[in-house]
Every structure is written in structure tokens, then in C-alpha cells.
Amino acid sequence: MERLQFRFDGGSRVAAASDACLVGVVASGNLEVLIEPAPQTDACAIEIRTAANGFGDVWQAVMTDFFERHRVGGIRISINDAGATPAIVSLRLDQAIEEFTRRDPA
Image (cartoon, rainbow, N blue to C red):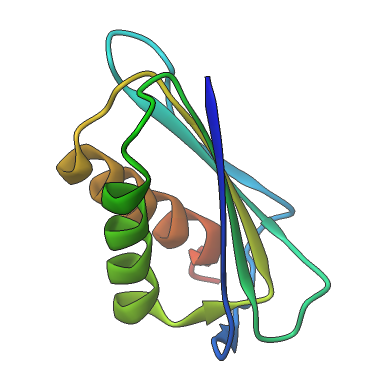
């Protein structure tokens, strides 16, 4: 099991719709993504636990792409991976940030 950590500064603080958001399931080569508010005002902190060792450069590229597309701050993202492809990782991250910031219409 490999553990990776990334931090991206300069994001905009996210208005969370809930205290935390969990999407995905760690099974059948998939992953889960948990997003929570964090005390940093502009940082996006990411921790990854993955069964696929040796792919740090790929994870760096996927996380950088996510941050460049969303520019989010004030959050902590935890990823538990069982061997998902980069495309699935990006999809789950997009789903998680959408759910985390979704507001029900009044």
C-alpha cells in the first residue's frame, strides 16, 4: 500500500453544501473519494492510499489536472484506491466536488 500526499495552494475557498462528501466504492478496481472542509483558506490537501505502487508521477498529473480545472481551496481530499485508471480517478473527483458544493434549490 502506497501513501501519497499533495498540496495545492492558491485555490478559492469552497462553499460546502455538507460537512463531508463520499463518492465511489473501493471494490473491483475502483476507488472512493472523501472531501471535507479544512481550515486552510486557499489550500487543497490531498492524501491518497493506493494498492498500485510506483505510479506517483501519474497521480501527480491527475491531481494537478483536477486542481487546474477546479481551483478549489479550504478542502481536504482523501482517496482510497484499489487500482482505478486515471480516467476513473478524474471522474470520481469531479463527482465528489460537484456533490460537495451542490445546493438544493429552495
